Image (cartoon, rainbow, N blue to C red):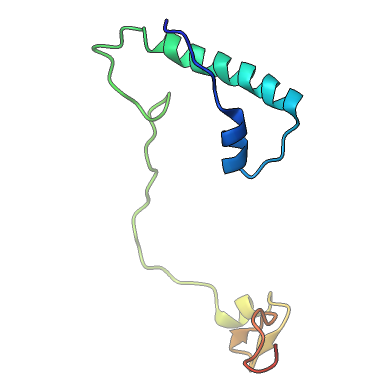
Length: 102
């Protein structure tokens, strides 16, 4: 395992826009050195012949047939809405101010 050099925690904190006390920076440097050391230790493992994976268990999509079938009646669906416009559309609260009103 190679010797891990000084980690510039002040620079990392600046990039993350964090204001850290000096004792916090020292503690974080120790913790980051431990993490980098562990990753370096993992790089020593022989992984030849092991297929790379994105997940620990196989994942598959569960798909259903795309079949056209009857839907709920419009009136029944609109009855669940808190408010409607002309019994045709669901009325939602305004999100953007009208032009000139801001």
